[in-house]
Picture: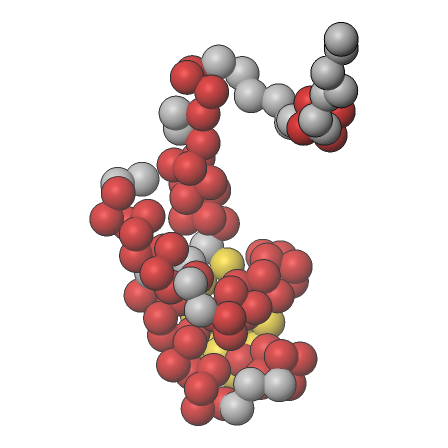
Length: 112
């Protein structure tokens, strides 16, 4: 993923409602969710939701699919995975990364 694409994705996600929509669609999985259901579950007015979905679509984070009279939105998992890989690309200087244990984050008592 190029930096400009990552910046576009981060900009789209840097808003409460859009982040909530994206996370809901991640939970819905590849089958996605109708815009009306998204609006209902997140209590977002349809006109506002339309704007947020457009922003997520422009960043290639969600994909709309017309099914009859409904538009089903699903996460573009390829873009999501590329964004996550972009973030971890230079992690730990190229060495395998592992989760930090809480013990490593706890201040140690000084030994006198």
